[in-house]
Length: 165
Image (cartoon, rainbow, N blue to C red):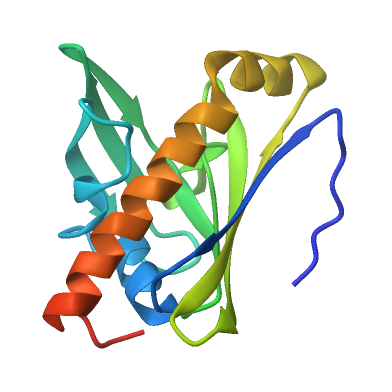
């Protein structure tokens, strides 16, 4: 799974996570699990609407120090167990967003038993938007979240709490 990167518009995070791909997939696609790891602690996800199909809602609301931040978007591509592509360029019903920011391409690839290569490519519409996201702390924030995802997925796998893709 390759994605050509534009260094002026795209940000990329790659981690080998010690968790099964099927569990990581569930963490990303189940509204019961995504809020448990999706933003750097102590911030939290307080609402989550995931309609896992192209054109379906991919929307979250964060509580960041008492301020609610809505992130409304749609899925563009869903390949079960392998790839999620979502954007805030559109909202449910293919309605254009007033101020789009990014498109995310998330992929999962087995690299060893119980180890998954997790790749997040975040594309921006302008150099300024990419620089803003980088300056906001993209690498630290998305890196922290990848660690939270790994820990949460390991716990689910250890408890046998997830077995689907």
